[in-house]
Length: 236
Length: 306
Image 1 (cartoon, one colour):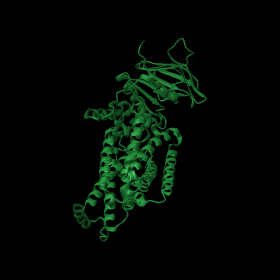
Image 2 (tube, chains in turn red, orange; image 1 turned 120 degrees about the vertical axis):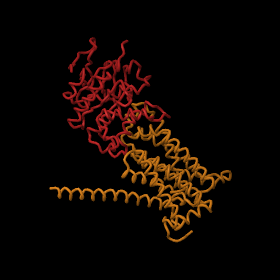
Image 3 (tube, rainbow over the protein chains, first blue to last red; image 1 turned 90 degrees about the horizontal axis):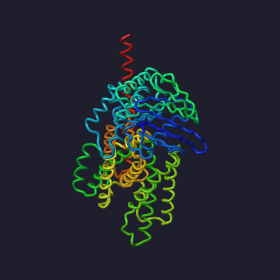
Image 4 (cartoon, each protein chain N blue to C red; image 1 turned 90 degrees about the vertical axis):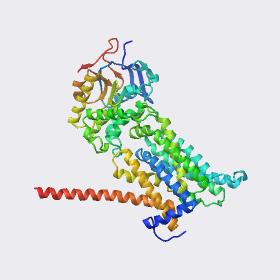
């Protein structure tokens, strides 16, 4: 089997009685950039959470880097930028640098401390995100766009192979969105990082992704599996 | 124990140093205050940023029922005559801390519901136990409002032990606690063991509360846990700086409380909390005043320039 970054195989999921996702087949290949689009309530964010193991599917199988999800432990290979990034506790008394550093904590593991080279890594990522002069400011003092870039930096600091972004453009001004996508494009070019992003703003994302998958409540039309259901793929 | 109205000024402090060197109870009060002034804001900061400050209150009230249960045992059974009711108080609050976490999971969208459930349950049981015992020979008010000068030799050992344990846990799990407090979901996806860390933290909070009750009392414990943090958050930038500043504020409050108890015979817990409120008001008011002055200064300059 060729390596897939994320593979979902005939996955069903429901919240109580309500079916949210049904018969989902999805393959994300190494280095591929995929956008999941669909209206509100189409199950986009739920799909991400299933893929990251926050929910358990009713049926079907999910693999991360060819490992069945329930046995997957290598979480540092995945960076996650949540939708809630813009509605976090704005008064949280932490500097941008402290927030970005927290992206390394899972990877470091219990009873290991930040070493000097870890802090170098933190500063390098902050620099890459164009936030160097704001490193010692409290996170709540930054603009929505700067905060979003800070959260992307936090997801990137552990050097992941897959970056998952849930609605990264919500509540972010246009120049920051542009900056964000250029940053993602650079990362993809330099490191071949895979991207899985959920968005309702397909026009902005389209030039920066390889594949757009439309999701509507129950059925996704996957991109590259010929035998499956009909495809609605927009090539970026 | 009235020694005049010096408060915590410099002349008073030299007298107090003499007293500390002379009297064991003063040494114990000082050590207890020092330890509590470190560990209370330490856990308080994590509680405040997670919007769970009231959990401290809930667990303190459960501790009351534990203390009452201990006193009842002491009264009813000769074998428990030397039993320290703080031990049963601690056992009750440790148990309750696990339940808080469980209740938070039950009511995911109303997580604060766990607090009134535990709080009223705790105080209800406490009151029933006290009435069932038909009153106690010891002063329950001491547990409610704290008396720093009455810390016994056996209690000081327990307070130091709790202090060491709490500092060790917070330092060892600082990374995980920070990540979970800032963004629980992302921390979970980064592989941080959410449930076990949360339970461990709940146990630590229960430990801090039990240790603090002697100094500030059940009704005021949450004040010492949250007020210094609230003041520090007005000033500091960054999490570590906020932590150090809140410890500093807590120490100032505790020593003023100790001085007031010693010189004026005031309730230590009440004074500690009042000084904390005062620090909060001065810091918050001062910050706004400075900002206003700076802003009007800029306005004048701008007008001059135009």
